Amino acid sequence: MAWFTHEFEGPVARHLIGGTLRYTVVWCPADVAATLPFATNPRLRMEADVSGHPIHGAWQPAGGRWYLMLPKTFLKAASLAVGDVVTVAFRIVDQSRVDVPDELTAALARNATARRAWDALTPGMQRGMAYRVESAKRAETRATRVAEVIEALKTGRKIGPPSRKDIAARRSSRG
Image 1 (cartoon, rainbow, N blue to C red):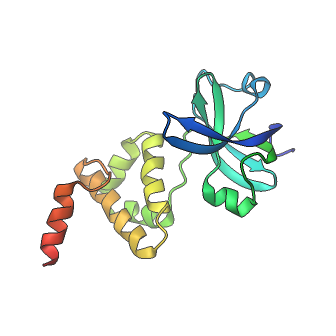
Image 2 (cartoon, rainbow, N blue to C red):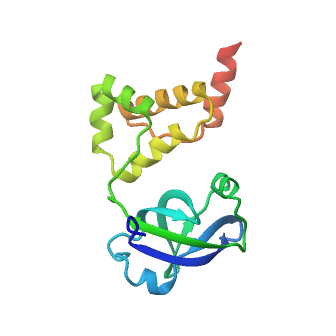
Image 3 (tube, rainbow, N blue to C red):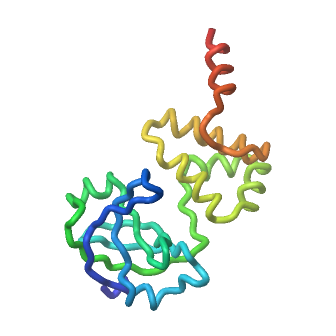
């Protein structure tokens, strides 16, 4: 635990939000939460080890409690399921840290306008754009998303799912 500053055991649980969204999480115990700076960082970023498997993320607030989301891919790789008791060791990291995929870093280096716009974004906005690129599985999709991010940064346009109008325009342009 020398690397990590906090440790506890707890069950993997389901967290239902708004009656429709279900997350698989581990809850931060109240005694541990009381020692963390949630007043200044309600979504406290950290690096952790969950029963021998590394993960990074943030403690998410939920009615005076905090949880760490455990993505399906993480659960599968760690062979974990709801109800399993896990050991969580973690440390707080730089709250402004953003892990930028190599392709996006290279594209930002080639475009000064996009780079200036990127530098003006909050770390949270940067993380969102970086995640959009990072979450793509195929190289072609990653390249398309890098181009979308660069174009959005240059034009100030928001990135999101394409509108029906955009989809119709793409279909008609294909012939």
